[in-house]
Image 1 (tube, protein in one colour):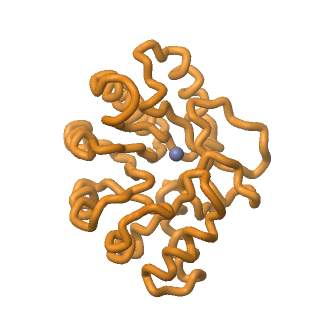
Image 2 (cartoon, helix red, strand yellow):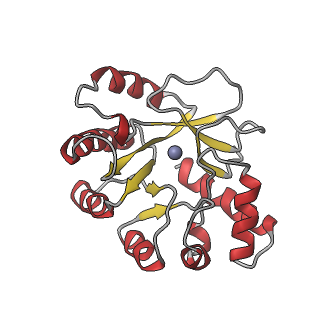
Length: 208
Ligand SMILES: [Zn+2]
């Protein structure tokens, strides 16, 4: 496994270098790729039994390394209550199959922190596309919640993130090399150093 891009929606040119989000599934017939599977908050309707059936089948598959993206969005999707029900079900899947979670969170970090405290999951949670400042990032870290950075981010956060918590993503927009060189320039490091550290971090996150 050589995953650099922790969150995308398109198969990477080199198989195995990205964690490809496939929604609830099914898993594409494509050799050498790895996936995450989850019910996005926008897609929650309250009548989701069929989706959860396909999702659990996907999560049980060894090619699926994480649950998500799932989470909370105050700007789009159904009521908070429905989003929370779907999220909690996916936390249970993540714990049952011992796979970490990739989270989509828009303006609702408090719900994520609250549920992490209440549910006390063993698996790590990683909020993708993080654009918050260092203070918010550190508040999340103190609750055991990780974040990943794409092209749109707060450079102060990317600069100050500890090496062993550095994660990057494309979210399906553009080549991962662009994100790597951006991270290298923000952190004043060589791209190879960035890549090696990210490979190490992803291996620890996804192979526990
Ligand atoms: Zn995404």
